[in-house]
Image 1: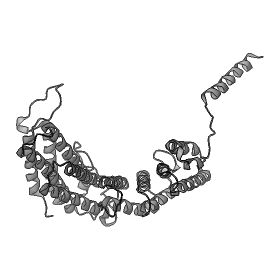
Image 2 (image 1 turned 60 degrees about the vertical axis):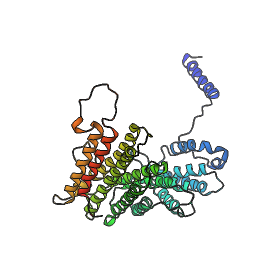
Image 3 (image 1 turned 135 degrees about the vertical axis):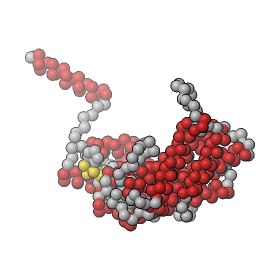
Image 4 (image 1 turned 90 degrees about the vertical axis):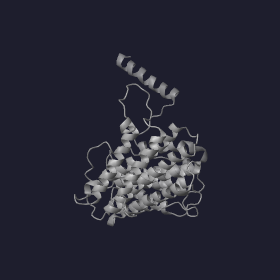
Length: 409
């Protein structure tokens, strides 16, 4: 036997043996998934892996009318699974996530499948749809928003996302849901609005989001007035309210104000000032009550950390809402709310004062009282350069400064 034939014969034998012992299977470039096993409850744990395999293997190198047909057939099969109440919830949830990941064309970014978006929107708005399916549909809708929504669906999606972001939790309305879970829905919807970037017809997106901020500010004012903020449930509610309001402020900074002509600058400025002030007030109350009531728990350093984290979440988001940029950047984004204001707009001066106070807060958190600042020593453990008394006093000073520029609410 010639050496070349003998050599290739040995190679072929090794490959066959390897396949036999290792269980390796050579998969054709294009294989259509059999969805029947997906419905079997014993396969529920395998579904996430099967979804990934289906999305990569079935659609690899498939284009044109062949891809259109495959997308339609795949969506139809997924809809059948999603709609079947006898299929376990985990599988139905993963199936609706898969529907949201279908793509007309791959790439960076890819192009999402418009027919899937229409289906997801319908599921999300169905009164009888389980909430786990609604959330899976919402995640898919947000993914479409991130990739770029087909203009035919844009307005419908904006309304859907805005309604979710603006809707307060009502126990009788959102049965079987906890308030924190509904906030999860709202924050996910805000991610979608950030991606779409529009201020909406007649500035509706901006005005509705400002109403959300003002409602959260009002909740915080109520907590400030009448409740023991050291109670576990009160503190949890305080943190969740600050987190949601801050996410809304950040979302406002993600919008494109360049083409907008109907944004109420005074209302927006009032809302940002009010939110920043009330967060400082609530955190000041916490520090003051801790000192005056001579509490021993939590540890003052831990309490200071909690206060600083909540204020930073708020102030960094407010800065983004104003400038579409970080506090450390020197210029506002060209499409930001701040950049959209005319030079003679009275809101500019008030926003500058607000920014100045936030900068002072940030510097205090990093370096402590200006009069007591010392040179940093290399390699020393990091710790706050202020005590709880100094933190209380500085927050009161900041609140008083914000009160001077606070508009009529």
